[in-house]
Length: 188
Image (tube, rainbow, N blue to C red):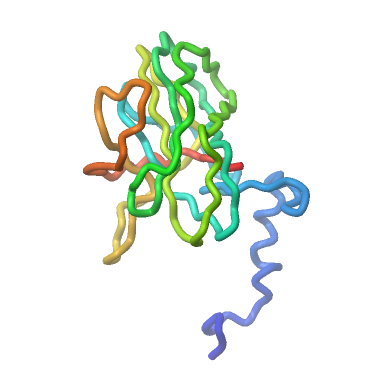
């Protein structure tokens, strides 16, 4: 048995199909994403004023300045507050974007939220990228569906928390609830 168990193929060749999804050259464009860009669909974000956070693996040394989410087929309507935030794996707020208040968010549109303070990652691991939108119609997001944690110590791929949030991210992700819909996030 080897480091890869009983697998005998070339892992790079076996996973090569992921590179066909339009991934830019990682030497030219830095980014981290929680999902590959294939098999994605329209998923519900969260209710108005509720934060949705998704797990994203970040590496020691990464400098994260922006979080980008992509709306699905439903545009935002009568938006009043919109912010994104980056949390540690323990759910502690590291940085948040400014509030984009009533800025329009059309269907099928990427929206980038600049963090107020860029975050240098000092330990590789799972972090949480969060989005909260207060609106009469919360835009749907591009994403996929995920299963509930199955094994001890496994975390949620997506979760909701908070209520009646406006312009400020909570200091911690308190009482997270499992969310089946997992939005795509791109961290740059």
